[in-house]
Image: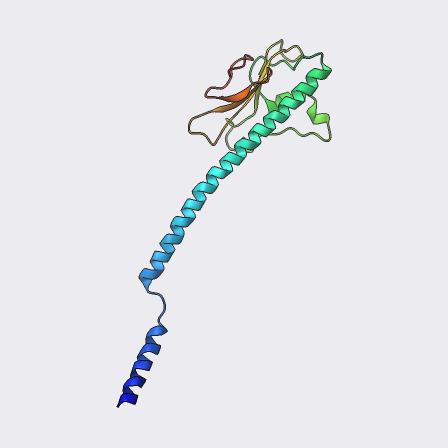
Length: 172
């Protein structure tokens, strides 16, 4: 009698241990994975914006270096553009950077989808010639709460402002 009860108990345990997960357990696991994936995606998106902003700042500093090199060859004067122009198209041509095999002009990676993300340049002087003494370079930043621009001025100041420059006077 004792032996038959022990066999029944063993068979009962074997049948219950072979059961899989319940539907509720599976739904809980799937929802937790979904929540973790959403959190990772949000933080990854912020990291991407921060990386693009760092790239923008680096690109503008490269344009600044090119402008300073140009001024060293042009008696301390910069290309003159009295209205805001694209650094990628106009300034590269003014600096003759397209002719250099080792130098390429940088363009904002978001500019293809949103034209407000463009590197911009403005200076004083008379348009099209090397007569400018002041310039301002800027780009719109992405990883900020309000619209802000990263600005580099010919007087050496760099920083952020909430409005885009409208003249060659440094807004910082």
